Image (cartoon, helix red, strand yellow):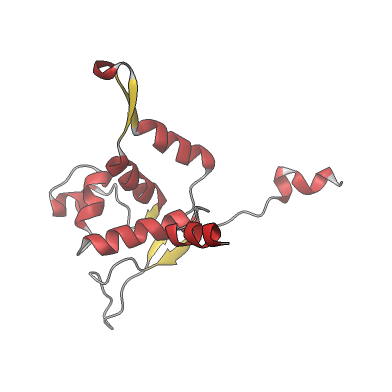
Length: 137
């Protein structure tokens, strides 16, 4: 096997991609404005997972996972544009953190969770439907 094909210099870098997650923001022609996203690295994903996991000492040291915050962080860390850390944007919605802003930008929960599902699939996770289809076979 030619090990040089695995050298970092030969890795195909994936850039950003666009997707319009909501129809709430439109251009002059009434088309939904696409946002810019990036895929998460394994290290980014693991950092987010760790940030959302805590030890509950009151319950014999069991770990507790904050899925709500995990979902927000997955989306926020994937969004390149709009800049969710922009103070003017946050101030316009009366929030101070990207994780609080992200849910304000959507008209309904369906749009928000459709984006989350889309980003998880882009990052290589299978949808529930795909698991169900595999189980049938």
